[in-house]
Structures are given as C-alpha cells and as structure tokens.
Length: 186
Image (tube, rainbow, N blue to C red; front, side, top):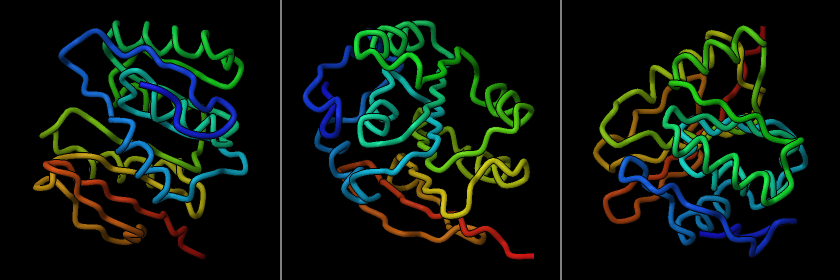
C-alpha cells in the first residue's frame, strides 16, 4: 500500500495485520480520488472506519488540512499512528480508538464539521443512512461536503435529499457512491 498522489506521493503505508480489515486497493483508491476531484484546497476530512488510515492520509496528501481518523480495533489504531508518525503529519491528524457511534457523538459535542467524509465500514453493517442522518442532524457537514460510501453492490443506498448522487461506480463486488451534501437554505 502506498500514497498515490500529492505531497506524500509514493510513500509506503503499513497495512493492518488483521483479517478484520480490508484495505482499499491502490487502484480503487486512485479511482475514488479521480472521481471526487483529485486535489483539495484545504478542509477537514472524517475517515470513520479508517483501518490503516490510507484513504484519509491520501486526502491529506492531496490537500486536506485536517483529518479525523477513527477505528475501534487496537491494531488499526496502532497502524494509523505508525503511518502518520512515519509520514510526519501528526499535527494534521486526530486519531481515535472508538466505535463509530461514540466517535460521532464526541465529534458532534466538539462541533466539528467536515468537507469530506469517507465511509468504508465492514461489509453488511447497513449503517450508512443512520450515519448520514446523524451527520445532518448534528450539523456536521459543510455545504457541498463530499461523502464517499464503499460497500457491497447490493448495499448501495437510495440517495435522498439533502444529498445528491454525484457518481456511482462498481468494482467487482464493491460499489463506490459519491454523494454531495446540499445545505438547505433558510
């Protein structure tokens, strides 16, 4: 695993030594970032089921200012910490060893809002809509926030307001959905 593009391009990443995570392949990572617009001009990113931290680190490499990286497994947490230390980006990354729901509550209490949200939970959890509803209800999404959902093809969600489906692509058994949050004008 490596960083595909940006200021950290070609740097190697350690993967999680566990069967409980499935890293996004370099090819799928490259496709994903090509779909959402390859570079960013700042902003905050949430990687809620981070695994090795590869997707969030890629976002930092491509121009995001700040990353909130969350995983409940100790091995994943330790791997993320190792990767960010090796890359020298500790001042840009907040790493949490928490269940996703506890992390969301903590971030909501801290009133953190995001420009990019990466959702790649273990397959068949069926929690995407619950997470999206929580993010909207707690005002955690900036207008035009991009949300990336990776799951099994049959688990792709039906997109409804205040989200717009920007793009959907299938890769083998996996579906990648790119949503954009459209803030309601009062």
